[in-house]
Length: 398
Image 1 (tube, rainbow, N blue to C red):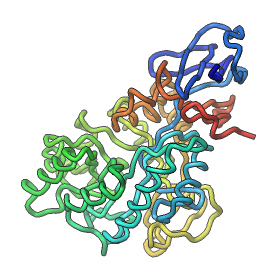
Image 2 (image 1 turned 135 degrees about the vertical axis):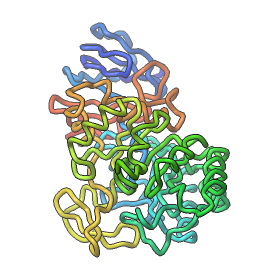
Image 3 (image 1 turned 90 degrees about the horizontal axis):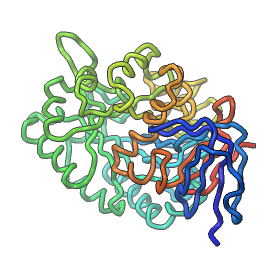
Image 4 (image 1 turned 90 degrees about the vertical axis):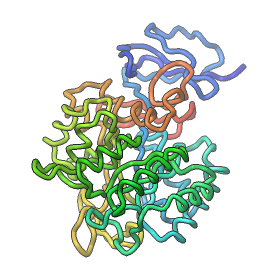
């Protein structure tokens, strides 16, 4: 008989309902039953975990993370990818997109070749979080909004490069960040690039862009539906020269990533964004880099020297913010404050919306029967007690 994992005496939060005290049965990696009654040893062949009133929520999905705990996708190393996928479970992540930074075509070729090998041979292994795909941040961005990207490596959009990279990755490129205004022939080039990405089953996302409101409007008409780390690396909210920010807030078609560390975006602006966009159009991300979880000191973001001090990472040369060192559980706790403890809204912004954006909401991102058992158990302080990825316990608090 197949062994069943039972999580009993738990508060269960899904996007549909809240069960104050119930239990979940997991079988064959999926959620088998959800019950609002007391568990009475219903299954003989089972492992039972008494949650003792703890809270179960969907596992976090980080759509945009560069690394952490000393590891990065730019390491170009299968063991490095494996080690990050194991470590990130301690912050409740069960699925993620692994992100590059702007680099040369040759370097990205090498990185995505290694990434493709990992996806083919290692991603199915059960002791870690699972990767959804690669998130290419650069090189098709604006030099005027480059942030912590090497300006010498920025390049005009090339769909042939994207197709080549996708092939190297075994068709695992999920997102391409781009600035649709960078080509002088915007009306032709951006249209062909935006629609070509969509035609290649790759999600175009506007980021590191100095575009106008009208530029975004046209990209939306061509199918744009995603915004990279809202407010950071984009033309601002100017009432006479509106840029990417007000367009991102205005268009309901656009789902916006948000870094909720209180550093990359002011706290009051986080609250305002939630009020304007609502819980259905925000995806919490970390945008974290390899120094996350490590002591203060000198590190690299790609090939750029950075300094980690306290809760910030900045470019050594200019002091520009260079990615984050926040975690998904920190962002989730901040969302609870921003939403006045609206747990279901927080679950949407940390799990369901991200699953929906990448087309896997029928598989994960919520707590419902027949979905992957991607779950986080939170203790009374909302810290991670257990992380379960596809039915396997991948992290357990000591």
